[in-house]
Amino acid sequence: MAQATAQSWRITTVNGLLLALYFVPAWTIAAFKIVVFPIRGIYERANIGPTLFVNDTFQLSTLGTVRFAWLLVLAKFVVVAYFLLFAVLTLRPGGGRRAAGDEALALALLFGGIVSVASMLAASSVGEVAALRLHATESLMLLGGFALLAIDSQSYGVRRRDEAPAGATVAA
Image (cartoon, rainbow, N blue to C red):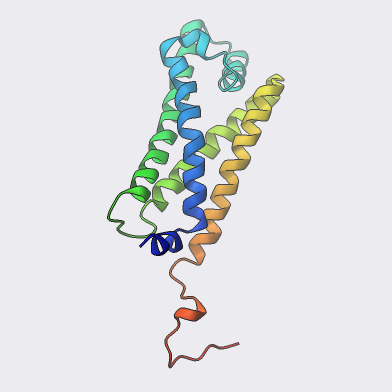
């Protein structure tokens, strides 16, 4: 039973679970810092790049900056929700389809990649080096996971050579 379960896991599933293991707590903590203390939370390393960029570009008031911070929180919570949905669909007992959470993973990687790349570009333009490194690392993790999902989903459902029917010939 354990061997059959281990063989049915694809590299995309393992990678998605590892990404969820990082992004769910990291982005939830960063988002809750804004929820609890909006002005202090936007000046944390995970949030300062996009906040300073939008604040400097549009010269927002304090209320406008807090409203933008709430939009950033909403975007991060959407990504966290999709990662949690992927983890629940993947780890639920009884299984179901082998790739049941791939759609949720794809949406988490897509939205997370957009937020992270935009944050990286914003941090780059305002000169926040520590935030730039953080968002560049997150962007590479998400884009790598998205590329892995695209490549691995092409082979999903293809029979291996040892699973081919006995009467079928393999064209070389």
